[in-house]
Length: 185
Image (cartoon, rainbow, N blue to C red; front, side):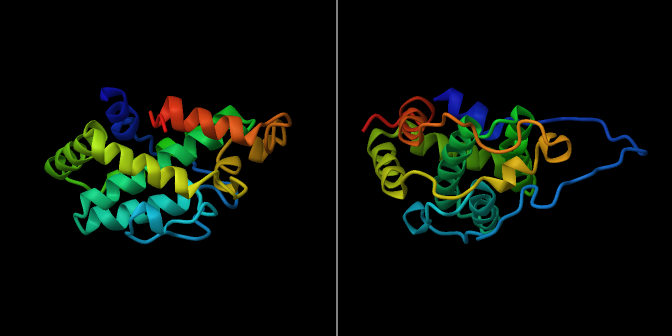
């Protein structure tokens, strides 16, 4: 379960450079149907990780760590699915940026409490099964991952733009649930 924590709570550190220019493509990390702080069962498979992370952030600001944990699992699973179907590998960093943005509002103490809540849910077989059932009911993502496509360098170069040609949605979703979310339903 430590793997979950590394993926869910990895921290990116960097030095600020005063003359750095940030250029973003339209739609980069854009939440088209923002989620609220709800349980995973109230999400739609038409909501992208960018949408779901807005719900994570709302839950975190309300200190609703159980709901935030559920939403985090859904956002990360959908994000992993999107990395399997988006050609541009530089775009895959979108999930890390969304995660960092949503967790950045927490103090160190709150982050530790959230990590503990997430770990407790993921390490409790009964709770984990409930979460996996919710993820199964949520289903295969049914949106175009524009938030991610527009995050990559291809949004500017036009190379490797879009989705993989030979993408098998069912196989990818099964892989995400079994190997990434560790849901062996």
